[in-house]
Image 1 (tube, one colour):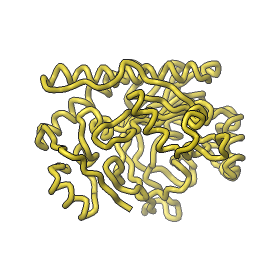
Image 2 (cartoon, one colour):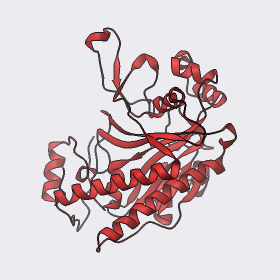
Image 3 (cartoon, rainbow, N blue to C red):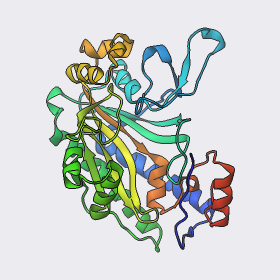
Length: 336
């Protein structure tokens, strides 16, 4: 069910063409700096994969992918990707990428089951990245090191905008604050996980919530995660406090990926042991894939955050319900 928040007193400082120019500026700069910080090379990536490979991202495990058949492969179901989390790891093996090096790509996806609002669209555009690591890098300290490198790129991009636009006000804190999902539950046991995110993000400005997907002491999960890409002990989300919507805005989901042991464990915990026979999962369980860290960084949400826009439709072209379009038009929210 769609919903929308109209912030009191909201008005964009830029018209649509000025916005498009700013979007291009942000995307070009951020992509370039991200590749430098993480030692990544841009590659081409698929818009769709065969269902039988098990390469598509199952997200929270309930979202339905858009699927179709093609004339030259009758009987085989092809799916529009949800993300490239598993495909990238296979690509790193195929391309012979060395430890300490990685890849990134522009990932475009359709998420048909999204509930549309100010921050959610059925169209997803993100930088999907993946980097080869050594087994000894599979620890919290290394995860934090990579998060800090990514946060530095956010800060550099904000500084670039401040130099480009004289009326631009910087707002990002100097550092990102780390907390585990269990620590967050212990801090605010009486409220929901979403409310905890909002409370902590409002206090600190930029946060990284670790260990998402695992069962907490309350016997609930902070949020769902598919069992076959992130290691639930070594992953997390980057969120920023967003004043216009009075909420935390998730920009990136990332993590150190499962190894043989954590994949087997998480498949069992999720009652998904049948996936073990799929080609990708079988290779991983046999130790035939490199150890990696990776994630996705939302391009439109990044632009929404840094350009201070109240609706993601102001920085991407998508399909919205008629009522939402009419409400935005009356409220000076210029959808692309």
